[in-house]
Image (cartoon, rainbow, N blue to C red; front, top):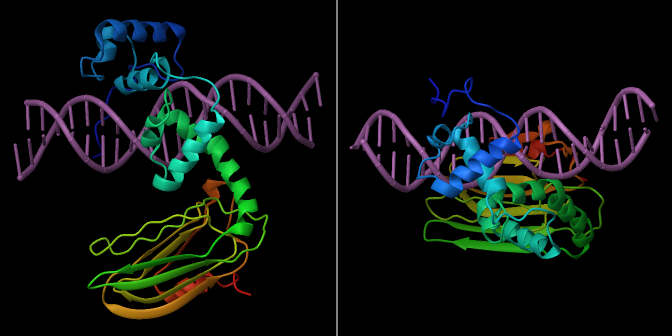
Length: 256
DNA sequence: AATATGCTCAACCGCAGGATT
DNA sequence: GAATCCTGCGGTTGAGCATAT
């Protein structure tokens, strides 16, 4: 049995808000506030709307301090910087922009900034730098080198994010850098219990999970533009492998 | 002018987690 | 400590508009 719905969908109005609905909600909130309960608010205010819908309408549109209209260059830069640091934590990013909501920032990112970033990557790839990360702990020793192969390209990788998750019980590393379409990954002397690797080419995100039983030493190369790339996320391709040989098999065709 | 395609953004959904009972 | 309620969040959807063919 699933979770009970927050309201009876057959008895509430859905879809776009009318100016009348907006006025009722705005007037009620200005007089009474939420009284700490959005769920009962629509009934008290005389609105045939779900409480969650009222909350969203107020926070994203009706609040007096909301800034409507296009984003400035400065705001774009803040979003790009924060996204590169913390990823899609839109509420945190929005909190750094006066009068912007998480929904606004998210929409702006999805429709404008992502494309802007990708366009800039195609130029910046020429100046990509190699990336090295070393992780050490008493039980775990792993050296990872990521080499960006510096070559201009028109191919697009749909993210600038490459994330590697170490065994969370020991250490955890997450880092991001411009992901070149041509790159070489070399991983040596990691200790593995359960091999699990996946690459999601629609997002450009790759993860590898390490545990602690078997030693291994391997090198993975994928060279060439990503043939799995699709501009539509609904057509995303997930390549999954349970072993290094499976993983290598998945990359046949990348290699020269 | 008609139709197809792409883009934007408001709104919805389900889930996680904190608060309350 | 368990169950329930409520809020806040990020992902997704789809109507309406703009642009291309």
